[in-house]
Every structure is written in structure tokens, then in C-alpha cells.
Image (cartoon, rainbow, N blue to C red; front, side, top):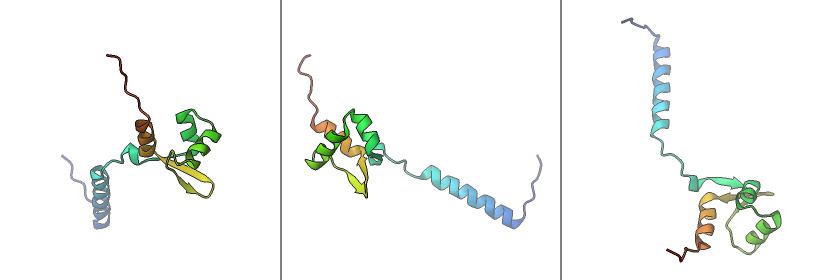
Amino acid sequence: MNAVILKEEEYNELLNSIQEIKAKLNEKPKSLADEFIENEEFLKLMKISRRTGQTWRDEGIISFSQQGKKIYYRMSDIKNFLDSNYNKSFKK
């Protein structure tokens, strides 16, 4: 086994790096439901036109966030929208 000698500064830097990696590993992963997608992604995902997306926003059918001209949708809101319009099969 070989010994490695580090300066105190290098040792502290190494410890800090290890602590940062450890902290990132311990972070709770983001839930996909908390993610936001842009309007274009939403339109493609739902396979709808810009006009339909605008109508849904105007009528309060889907929740959204807006910053200037950019529109964002939370994935959990999209899931809730789809769940509220879900029809269970009646055939067994």
C-alpha cells in the first residue's frame, strides 16, 4: 500500500468535495410531478393546437404559470386534468 501525502489545503479541498457529493446523494430526488414544462411541450404532449391550449387556459380547464409571454404547466396539474377526465372501462 502506498501512502499519499497532501498539503492541508489539498486535504481540506478533498474533504469539501466529498461532503458536496455526499450532500447531493442524500438530496431527495425531484418528483416528476413537480416539474414544469413549456407550452410547446404541453401542446405536443396533449396533441392539441395552440388555440385549444389557449381555450383551456381561458376557461380555467388547466392550471398554468406565465412569465411574460412564456407559459408553463406543472406535470401534476396535467395529471390531475387527465385524471378528472378519466372514464373507467365498464367491460370486464
